[in-house]
Image 1 (spheres, rainbow, N blue to C red):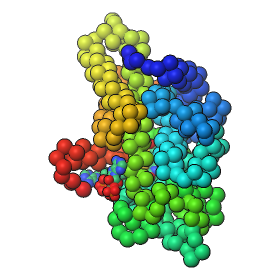
Image 2: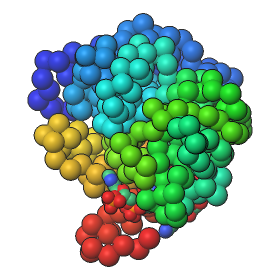
Image 3: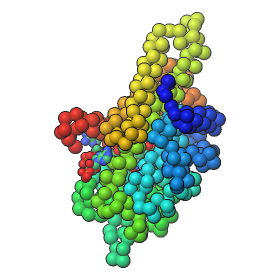
Image 4: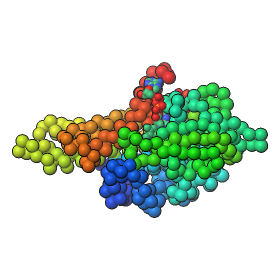
Length: 384
Ligand code: TGC
Ligand code: FAD
């Protein structure tokens, strides 16, 4: 896409693109079939410094701006959504929250090891009975007489859950509703903290997804993130603005991969004496995917631009996430269709794209939740 990138953004895009093509793409399908964690990619992200790309330079990160971050995530999403997941939870949801809300001590303790990838982050918001409505979550944080808190509760579907060294854990310190929830930085090796992998996912088969169970986990007062008790939902929803931007970028990358794969395949495959790409209805499939891809990309880049200019980007992030996720499912489905029966076999990438895309309309706020956020912004009336 023609876009005026700065020399730094251009360098990030080129470097990540090359690295993704060399390291991520060749292993993605095999890892998916074997449900194998993409360890080579994680090692490479550490070695290249990409794992700290958006963390401020003073903490050892790359200091990348929002557009560089989006370009980075888009390339990862093009290569393998599993790898993208690791990074955007670590950087966008967890490191970003520490940069935004942390005390100087919290930043110095956690950001340097996160920038090198020595410590990975995970984001513990969703509970078995509270997904779309985290304001009612039930994990508890009981203040202790000598200071600090006793944490109890269960979190479900947590990306990076078994490999992370740090969890951003939302738990109830006070009364009901959003203002009763606080955010905590909990080292995953604290006694009483257990992470159990969840298997059998429809897609993202090589991604680490876990249930976290905390039983009488003791943390000191320094674990509280957000300045004071009661800010936990604000911390989480602010993080999700970045999470949604990141997911929109990932879906743009996945749609690009689906389109590239379709174009290549349909030019090689012949039916009725010519490449299937020569049939008009196949070209319609390609054209619709290409136009939706551009829409996804432009909506996503707008979020990065708003963020870079210090504007409110929460609504733009919801719109981009909503559109790009739904469009990525359509793109992947078109890719399967263009492959005919071969699209249904997992030695081809098309099926993986569809399975990996499917979750994107569910997490980081479902499509229905994004519609309600957009509808509320238009009308001033909350349907929640
Ligand atoms: P409400 O309870 O009224 O608001 C609470 C406070 O938060 C403020 N706020 C925001 N702040 C910044 N950015 C936003 N987008 C914000 N939205 C709300 C709000 O102003 C209020 O502050 P204050 O000062 O008035 O107290 O909450 P709400 O009614 O606005 O939100 C309701 C709803 C449904 C939109 C929200 O709960 C929501 O977004 N639910 C969806 C939950 C969700 O997205 N979960 C995702 C879990 S993480 C995940 O899926 C990771 S996937 C991993 C991967 O990508 O691989
Ligand atoms: P529910 O909230 O039970 O929703 C069920 C259905 O009801 C949906 O269709 C929903 O749109 C609809 N619905 C709900 N409320 C409304 C309403 N008011 N109006 C209209 N429709 C409504 N969470 C984390 O905290 N951290 C993670 O790292 C993380 N990673 C994940 C990884 C994977 C692979 C998956 C599958 C999930 C992950 N999640 C994570 C959880 C994810 O964010 C939730 O699954 C999601 O927010 C939806 O919550 P739920 O599953 O409880 O669905």
